[in-house]
Image 1 (cartoon, rainbow, N blue to C red):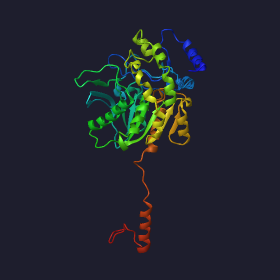
Image 2: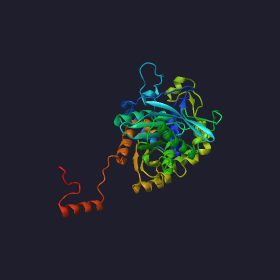
Image 3: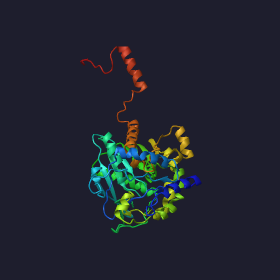
Image 4: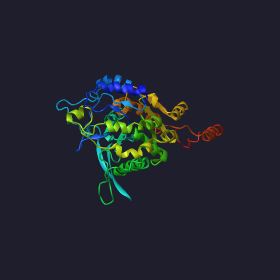
Length: 398
């Protein structure tokens, strides 16, 4: 982190109350849940979105390695009455499933939120970042389906996150540290999609658009590169993560996690900071995997097949390899300077509209190809020689 960046961060922190947690957020982001269920997501009001955009803009351009957490105190509209009452996940998804995945050395119970596609609509598969959960995409998923009602959304939860559980073959729940290697996380995602297919008796997978935030972006890129979901994948969108800035940010992660409070004095103070009571995922326990998540990400992103969309909160996040690829037209780049690292939460509607436009440009279902040149020539010769088109059979009524 440069001296300019340190000065900027210190200036922001100086005005905060002493008991408040450090608002300097260096991704990966954190999953925050109480001991019981907490689906505390709230609909984003347009007025709150506009109000917060100016501060988020200045924060996102401050540094690619340390993004200031946007002021979320007024970002989510709370219901009238008890302001601490969480809203249920049913306001954002139609179903939830616990899908058993039996492997030779473990049993994974994958927890997902799902709204199935209708009328041959596409399926948007959403993967959160490190420390977050499937509900990170709740408001985004709602905005997506407002614009395309036939679309399906599947928001998955990685092992060690949300309510996904890993057990031994004897039924004992495995605790931390979890194996969060990129290869295993990639396999988990592919298996989860196929388990959903089996659960809903789909004869084949619908057209799929993969969307991953932060670590989730690295996971979906690995899935596409390996081709484990076959030709069903139309394209993939990566939200605010590139190899260069991610690797640089990891150098500051230990410092950030050490300064972050492990508990809060009260429920009210925790929610006021937009964090519930307890950290569900201990990111310090995953340190051995940090570098492997992002090493080679830019190369994999450019080499994987399918349409590519990269959404960033600032152009300073681009590394050299991606700059060259962008100039060569290998992927679509969009920058939301008014958003922080949680692009899909800070700008859910704008992100959803961009993703839908990306889908429509990669959707081949309505594409009508012209006839082959050889076929057209033979048909023209038949008409010229006989005066009768090949589809005009004898006795047919014109």
